[in-house]
Length: 100
Image 1 (cartoon, rainbow, N blue to C red):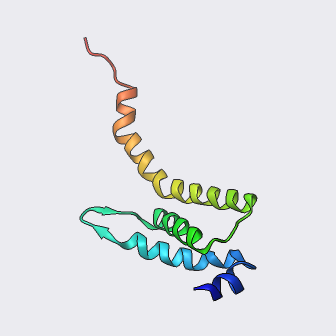
Image 2 (image 1 turned 60 degrees about the vertical axis):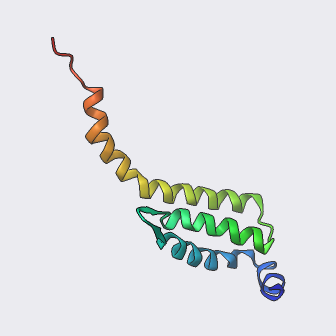
């Protein structure tokens, strides 16, 4: 599939974001028993696959910005679960008063 890669995605690599997000959301919805990737990890995997197949070079600062956006989205998704688990299991262990 040379035409989109050469005529569209090489001059404007930022357009690859849209098919990557779409494929990532679809990939994130797939389930195998109780295992699911989720939207954030699905987008990361789709980005790795599409980026390696499209052979489009992305500059360093753009890579850094999108990696930071990925970390933010992952923290935004996992953060409440972490603090809920910390409140439930972690704090009683920290403030454990020895009996005796």
